[in-house]
Length: 221
Ligand SMILES: Nc1ncnc2c1ncn2[C@@H]1O[C@H](COP(=O)(O)OP(=O)(O)OP(=O)(O)O)[C@@H](O)[C@H]1O
Ligand SMILES: [Mg+2]
Image 1 (spheres, rainbow, N blue to C red):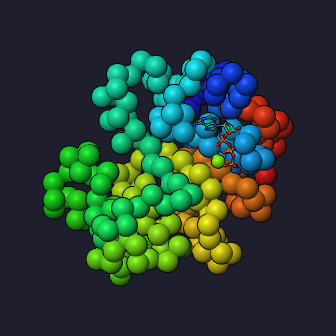
Image 2 (cartoon, rainbow, N blue to C red):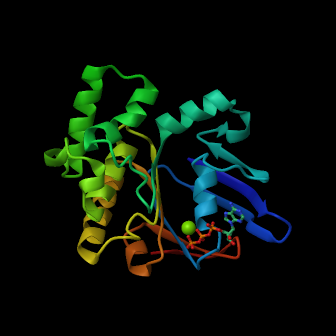
């Protein structure tokens, strides 16, 4: 589904954040990415998610080359095909849960009626429907992360990119989030999750390790 060829990303003169990453991610796969701090995990995810650009190499998504998309096409592609979960939430604190989850649907142009149904159904999935009218700033960490997942999901993307989705959570909330991701994967979503934790990575089908911008070893978990 996603094919990466020799991706290189350099910051300044000395820092090769990605030093030739080639990797295939299959449709419906749950891939974990682990590796030391600074090894390039977030950079890789951001490039896959079109949040950042590569210096060279190629990415194909279902046969579409990222480089062939215009800015407008890329924005649309991102909105429709990719859902992104960040470690630090990035919710709008003064917005309600409803309004936060609504953002990608507004971009995609759904009607108010469609939006309401989609938002309610998605919040049900992450067990947050009861907090639909609460301001994001008043949620707990685990609740915020579930709203982030809802926001990433509401558009029915094909791929979920998660950068340390449990990084700020206690063990109970971590388990909740991992179970939600696992369930989404069972329902057919492709999931790419960056994590510091080997035990969190064990929930994935496959785990790759980054070191100094390269992929070290590959093993099936
Ligand atoms: N915007 C930037 N400008 C300069 N250097 C950057 C930038 N973003 C990342 N880097 C550097 O690129 C390298 C890879 O960073 P990246 O954030 O991908 O690491 P990571 O594996 O996600 O680390 P962590 O586990 O700490 O999140 C690091 O050395 C980092 O300092
Ligand atoms: Mg990172």
